[in-house]
Structures are given as structure tokens and as C-alpha cells.
Length: 496
Image (cartoon, rainbow, N blue to C red; front, side):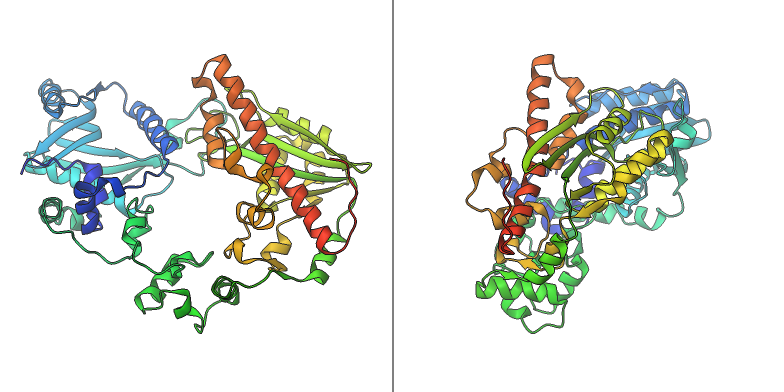
């Protein structure tokens, strides 16, 4: 067998025997999850972490792994102290070590991760590398995982020794290291099996990442089924599944949360909309004019580029603001400049656009309030004005979160991405799929984060689409607010 098992392939195939077989024999069933930002973060963090160790030799990637192995061997023989992407092969197992510290009395392994904590799969990753090195005759003195410190806040120049955490996992990985040989044999057997391997659905289908073959593996389950219940923990879903409670019919008499039962009841019995007008009226009566509808877009930096930022902190770069003034619906917006810190300009613009002591609607207000609170901490001179906005935010999600308005098409969710099409299924102007280029928050985040990679003309197009996407978010809130008023018999006469 000439299969080469890389460390990433080893970790991917480790938890599920069926995954290995499907990856070889039914690759067309693999549903790609968008992870460009994750890969880019990993690349940037890995490159930065090398600077923790001073001068280093870099083994450049080559499709011919033998070239990388030969260059690594030459570097080791020269006595190079630090080697990045040092590459080794033992039998069918191949790895590139992120950072190898090469001493006379042995080597140290440093595996760099762009996360802020150690996950179990990282330990398997390191154990695989140590297994290869030991079987090639290297004395591995220490094995480490390097990851980002979530508590680090940048002030001035990056302090790499504070940004990164280096954790010794030498002893922790030993039980996993002892299993590597048998795991590789099992994986190779699964890859080359002529018969499809069957594995039941379990926690490994969802953690640490949702499996790209999950749709294929669930193809024979009844629809809808227990995995379609919104907001239920995956551990609880799996308990029900293993007890044979799979279809919605199976779950009707289960002792589970009433909201789950409501979703099951509405979808099974095709029930009409449930509306609690009294509660909705109480909610609407708390609102006052002028009325604002606010939505932020944010992005994250694994490596904080600006002061006051921690790894993966939400950085607001854009907002849309619809507002009703003298029975006329108006709109304003802000979009930061790429390659700069957008926060202060955004904060100043927000203060200018929203009058003090006025009612502001947000959908899932904890997010908007969190953004504003962080801005207030960052800019003490703007804190009073920002916190005035913060303290006057009302959550438009409340009637849907409380199920005072519920339809079967919401499928147990109170997210605006479910509520909106449930309420306005025939309105193409409210359909995010009809937008060009950017259709959700993840795409908006990635688009802004990579704006500097494009030329001026491309940037104009992307910026235009960012504005259109965010504007739809707040216009959708206006339409939802109107709908709530309409079902309560309130005449809302505004010019749009």
C-alpha cells in the first residue's frame, strides 16, 4: 500500500472509520465547509509564531514530499537549531513539524494552532508527529502546543511572548502516541476496504467540527428528525437518537422542553400561526419615536493589529441604521476603510446619527450592546454618549424568542434568518439569496477582512455589496416591526 497518511489526514480519519472509506470511495459526497478564513488565520499565526524562536530555516512546501524530506535532512545535518516545516516520513506516515528545535541531545516539537485553547484533536496531531520522529531514531525531549492567549490585549508593539502560550504536552500525549501505529493500520485498512464501512451517528459527527459527510450519513433518517430540533444540545439529541427516538412522531410524548414540543407539533400537524397579541402589544407599547433600527457587522483578527484588541475580538467595521422621523423612513450607514482601525470613526458616526435618549431596536441586542460597550471602554471620551445608546436598546427578537409569534416555517428558530422568510415568504426584496456576492455575516466578515487583497475597482464592488447586505438587515427589522403592528391592528403610516 502506497497511501501516505499526513498529520491532518490522520486527525480527520481518526474518529470515524466510515470517514476514511468515504473520503476514498465517495469523495463526491463531501460537502465543503467554507473555511478560507480559518486556513488564512492558521497560516498567519504559524508564520508569526516562528519569530518566537529567532533565526530559522524554512522548508518550503513542495508537492514532492521527498524533496521536503531531503531538505530537512540536510538542514538537520548542518546543525540548524530551528527548522520550520521540518518534514519527515516513517513508513506510511508523513508530517511537517511546524517548528522543530534541533539540539545535540535531541529535538523539541512545537505545533502551532490559531485557536485560544487546546482541543483533544491537537494532542493526536502532536502524538502522530512524535511517533514518526521517534521511529526515525530522534530523541524527542519535549512536545509542545503553541496557541493564542485570549487574555492578551495589544498596546503598542506586539509582544509575542504574551500573545502566545507554549504548553508542554509531552506526558499528556503518551497514551495517544502508543495508539498511533494501530490507528494508522486501521485507517489504511478502512481506506482500502472494498465494502462500505458503516458507522452510526455519534458525537464525532459534530465535534470538534461538523463532518463534511454528515448529509450522506443521515440520508436514510426520516424527515424531519431529532437532529432538526433547534436549540437542543447535540448531547441531548444523541441520547434521544440512541434510545430510538428519531422521527418527530417518536418524540411527541417525550419529556422535553415545551419549545421543542411546539416545533414538533407545528411541523407534524401543519398548524396555523400562533400569535399572542396581548404580549406583542405590551412589547410594542414600550417603543417610542423617533425609532431607530440598528445592525452592526464585525470581523475578527487572530493576530490583533490595533491597540485594545485581543485575539478574535469582535471589531465593528460597519453599521446600517434605518430610522423613522416624522412618519418617513430614512436610512444612513457607515463602512470603515480597509486596512485601518475603523472603530473610532464608527463610534463618532454612530453618536452623530442617533439622537440621545431615543429608542433603538436591534435584533438579538446582546451583540449590538456588546459592541457598543467595548467601544465605550476603548474611548472614555465617547463613553457617555455610547452608553446612552446602549441603555436605550430594545430587542426586536423578544416576541419571537418568547414564542408570542410562532409559525411552523420558523422551524424552532428565532433567528432573523428564519423569522424573515417565515413572515415574508413571497417578498423577493427580503430574500438574502437574491443579494449579489454577500448573503450572510460570515461572508461580510471575510469580504471586509480581505478588501486590501483587491484592486480599486473590485473593492468598489465589494464595498457596494457590503452596504446592500447590511442595509437589508435593518430594513428587514423595519418590516418585522411593521408586521407586529399590523397583526395587533395598529395603523403604521410611514413613507418608505
